[in-house]
Image (cartoon, rainbow, N blue to C red; front, side, top):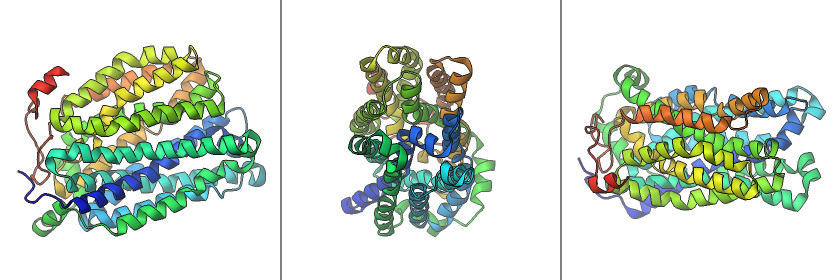
Amino acid sequence: MTTPDPPDPAVLRRAVAASAMGNATEWFDYGVYAATASYLTDAFFPGDLGTLGTMLGLAVSFLLRPLGGAVWGSLGDRLGRKAVLATTILLMAGATGLIGLLPTHSSVGVLAPVLLIALRVVQGFSTGGEYGGAATYLAECAPDRRRGFFGSFLEFGTMGGFVGGSAVVLLCQVTLGSAAMHNWGWRIPFLLALPLGLIGWYLRAKLDESPVFREMAETTPDRGRLREVLTDYRRETLVLMGLVVALNVVNYTLLTYQPVYLEEQLGVGESTTTAMMLTGQVVMMLVLPMFGRWSDRVGRRPMWRFSLLGIIVAAIPMYWLMGHGIGWAIVGFVVLGVLYVPQLATITATFPAIFPTRVRYTGFALGYNVSTAVAGGTAPLVNEAVINTTGWTLFPAFYMVFAALVGLAAWTGLRESAGRSLREDRQRLVPRGDVTSPGAISAL
């Protein structure tokens, strides 16, 4: 099937902007949390195991993501994508902004970390519906032959949020100095999430519902979406979950845990670490649309295979290089980041196409968030705990290799979706190996 009518360019631009803005707000929080980890440790988790407490604060936000995915995904498949996306962005921005207003451990004792963790749980619950909904909405609005290119801008928003969070923290560090940052300056980046969320909400409130969902709603009887996913789409859900293991272990190790790793294990200074992370993230951000466009030509499966094999081969030597100086640390981070981008750039084009329209939001949100809760948000905590216990500083590299092997096993069950319509009733797409450009794929 093909799309009956090409999407209106203005409508498509609004869909891209609104989807990317919400994702940027979500990842602005993660970028700020990662870049301010040392300040949060002092403010909320003083003591010898303070860094573990901070990483726990990150990990705990993922506990409710599967529940959020089930709740918001089911609502999105019943009521529409637009209403849910407008709600989740407000919850995310509100929870992030309130972190900047929390009292510290020195003021209220143990209540301080309890409040921090409570807000991270709210953020995690709302995020459970945010990402799957934004990716689903954008995939359903994009033209079939350019879904990879337009979908990559959702991840452009991801990196934009991360870059924005790191850049704001770096600016505060340079402007305020270390003492002020530890005292109160760390609050400023969190407070900025509030206006970002309001802008995103305004953009989403002006959206039309996706055309694919409107067509489905007019012709498909209402059924229990979650039950249908669990009974009829177990295989698809497991494939998605396996790919997400690889995606998120690399993501949260490379982008979220890396500042802590550089500062604690390699002795790199706070400002230098933030600048290094910012450099690598900008490079990743700039190449995202290129890889998204390329996936429209060669297919999604070859992009994932290239990325997974590249990480398996390069992760250990690149982490070994990081221990040999700041320059090598930058090289290692950029190389791994670029190898990871083919996965990141094609999420929106790959994952929504696994499920049919009537359960797309539910299936994506549930499978993605269950896998993320188990093997994504826990990655920084696992890395920190193993290194502290064993002193094995190369563990993050081996952890990434293991996750990539899991993803490669799941990849064997992934069906090619490049150029295929999302309007097909059942997305049991095509036999493995059927791709858009065999010549281009063989080059990989």
